[in-house]
Picture (cartoon, rainbow, N blue to C red):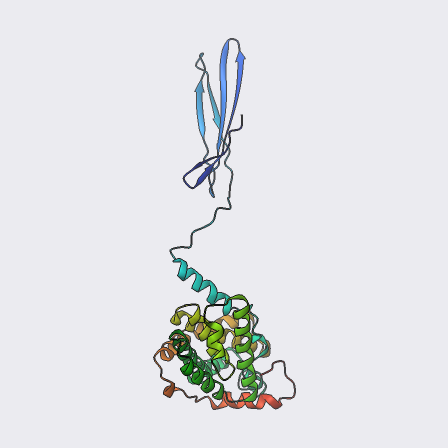
Length: 306
């Protein structure tokens, strides 16, 4: 007869026992079938030998069966705070977070049309320069200083950083790109991921927050650690550039991933520089990339807003 499921530790066992007794010429034989089906594993083949009064053996074999359960899996050693920080970073800097990054190319569209970027090699070289010697490093440095100012609740310092970051943008379309994404990031954070003091901190700034400053402020108010926030921000920035270039060159998905692999060390190096940089260290040497952002404003055929 069927037996109810029983819990042993974290393993669910279900056992079915069927007994059939047959009497032939005064000799009795018994067949017993046992099916054991543990959690997330193949059930064990079980062979049982029973002997009747007349010593006639009967062999019975249980059939294995794959069983699964919906029991939750542990967080793999993350503390509650670490898990929350990781979850929020992955959400905020995901392409699914609606800041509109997909509609901007940061001047890459003009660089492709001009023939500066034609394949995986020229794209990787261009992005490496933008990351380490151009807007990537500047944005990372502004994020670091905005984070620290917001964490210390130094509203006047944060306002000055936000004003400087907005002034550092080299073209009108790049200004549109970073301010619109910053505004969207703050608005969505307030609506869905609000934190104590966030409204007051944002309201104390005299200029709209550009994207890296907005990310730094929100991360600080949520007590998400600075270093992973910076690495995640730079990864998202590079990924968005590659996504735009993949539609312009075009590149396949595998080649796009190859570019991302080649830039891994550059992302780490830029993050480390920015963590130790002062505002006086800010500067850009990517003149061609800045020119691409300016020329894109009058480009005849365009897919992107920058």
